[in-house]
Image: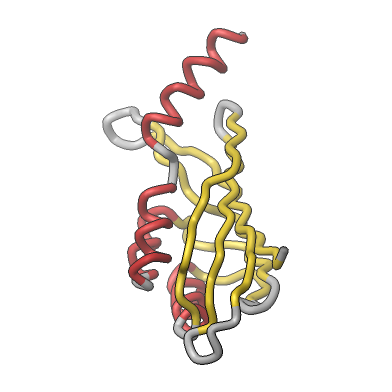
Length: 136
């Protein structure tokens, strides 16, 4: 069992789960790039300055996140942890964002809950189903 978890962890860190698309979406403020990594319905609980709560369809979530992030600019992103079980994973991302007009700095943590599904070529595809955001 321990070997299986270690092999899975190595596979996960090689593929970075949803790290690349999320990081690029935040840095470039192009959140439509999140569509392939989100389940059709996603549960969201984000504190200010993003302030989105509820069960949203993928497109609605992307639209809401784009609108809330429009007034922010990412200064620094740091992936802080990853926990992986066979078909479930949790990743966290620390962010420093600045309000574009006032320049106020905000420290924020995104916690991403994902589950996997098999793709046609039998590789695991990780999909976001719950997103929690905390101002720290």
